[in-house]
Amino acid sequence: DARVTQTPRHKVTEMGQEVTMRCQPILGHNTVFWYRQTMMQGLELLAYFRNRAPLDDSGMPKDRFSAEMPDATLATLKIQPSEPRDSAVYFCASGLGQSSGNTIYFGEGSWLTVV
Amino acid sequence: AQSVTQLDSHVSVSEGTPVLLRCNYSSSYSPSLFWYVQHPNKGLQLLLKYTSAATLVKGINGFEAEFKKSETSFHLTKPSAHMSDAAEYFCVVSGTGGYNKLIFGAGTRLAVHP
Image (cartoon, rainbow over all chains, first blue to last red; front, side, top):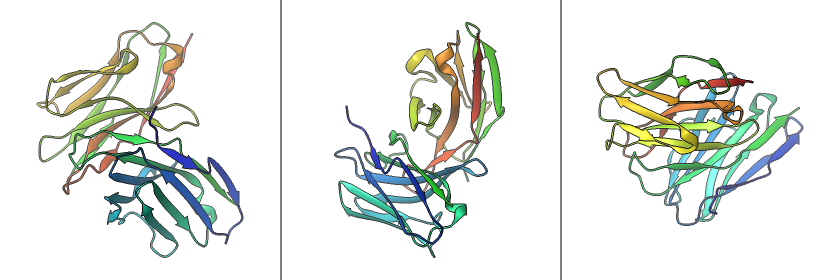
């Protein structure tokens, strides 16, 4: 049963610490997304990769956030330094191809709390 | 620009009664539309999608949605609600720019009462 895998599932950290979230997309998928979900803002797109290249990170705060794909099986989202306002659920999603009708599959999320 | 509006933030129904979750979209071209469901503390699961084929789309768990271009709507329905349907539902339109950027509605929380 193919699925998007995210780690850690839950993370509590202190303000100022570095946080790294990891995502393993579904094998063979060449598009990867990072979304952030909060009560106030709902679901926001942070970054988008196609064939490991970042194509859209306009939704990501550049001063503290960074997203990479070291290889086709791993995507990372890093926050340094973390702040309480970064507390949210971070979802990774993957898909195949670039057609607008292609299904995007979501992981179960990384629940981040910054205190 | 594309956008999607979910007309109800909360819907409450009794078990066994019909479900209607309303969604309107705005798009300058023929869109792809999706409904995703999110159960508490879980990720998002695809219920169904419309991609310019049949306008009535059947999904999982007895849900279906009808694409109505004249009304720019893509409402989600189910004939008979089950307790396990209680969740948050997101209407989504696929964006432009040559890739499948998903634009989410604000979500509708469905409560099902015995």
